[in-house]
Amino acid sequence: AMMRGLPVFNAPFSNTRSVAEMVLGQTILLLRRIPEKNDRVHHGFWDKTAEGSFETRGKTLGIIGYGNIGSQVGTLAEAAGMRVVFYDVEAKLPLGNARACSSLNQLLAQSDVVTLHVPGGKGTKDIMDATTIAAMKKGSILINASRGTVVVIDALHDALQSGHLSGAAIDVFPTEPKSREEPLKSPLIGMRNVVLTPHIGGSTQESQENIGREVAEKLVRFIQSGTTKSAVNFPEIPYQERTGTHRILHVHRNLPGALGTLSSLVAEFGLNIVSQQLQTKGQVGYVISDVDGPVNDKVMAALRAHPITIRCDLL
Image (cartoon, rainbow, N blue to C red; front, top):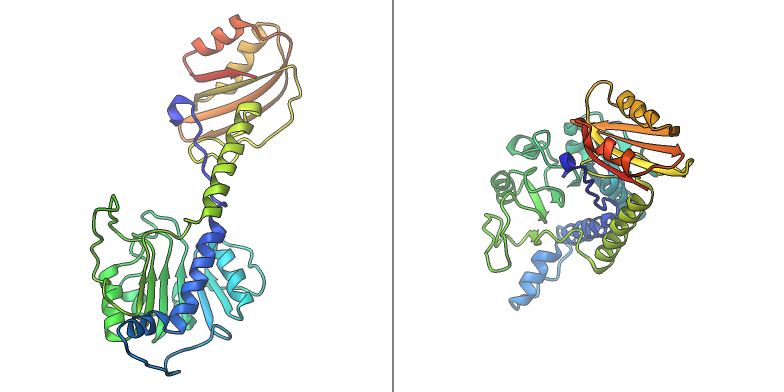
């Protein structure tokens, strides 16, 4: 899409609340051992006991990946009385009383609950393996609602079976079914201290409505002004009021001198460039030019015919 001059937009903020609420809910359920007690009652057993059940108040939540979702999880957890620490490879501004950890192991050693909110990719693949899980506090809980590739499921299974971890909640898996008819295969199935969900962290009625609205708004802004702010595959140019009579949107190959070439070509037709915004990403450059004067079909034909041009539109 990028090499055809087509920006792709997503809605990274629209489902953060949904994921954060689910993680907090799973934290409460696992600290109270509700999944196990629910299973026992369904089988007719009345195990009324406080053993192994804890409040969230005073417990430490460790957040790996303090981005849009991770930071919101921390805000909700703090409201529930939890102490919040986080680890991120980038410097992040703490919200509330959250505290940054200097290393992953520092976070793991002190956290009663560890929740993952990291992107996929080589940098995070198998971040929670046998070694890092062993570094977690004994009796702690692991929650993953980020990417299925970040936790080694067999290592998690072994830690739960040995009692090193008291519980886990997994919403994403290394290999997920492609349809409702295809069964999930996982060694965690049947473990009473594990909450398994079918990748539904961001799936609520509210989030779906918010996603539709946010993406539609971005598409409308792009069509009306050319702004590509928060495009996932494209050079990002923020919204700016039009300063000329016409606006030229020019997507080109990211080559040296491209901006000068475009400006010279526009000047050949006697057009004055009032303002320009240029951003590049990888092999693609994108420039928004506000011009005074009539931009006719000959101008657009010349711009589109130039060898560096990928796409050119007029507003």
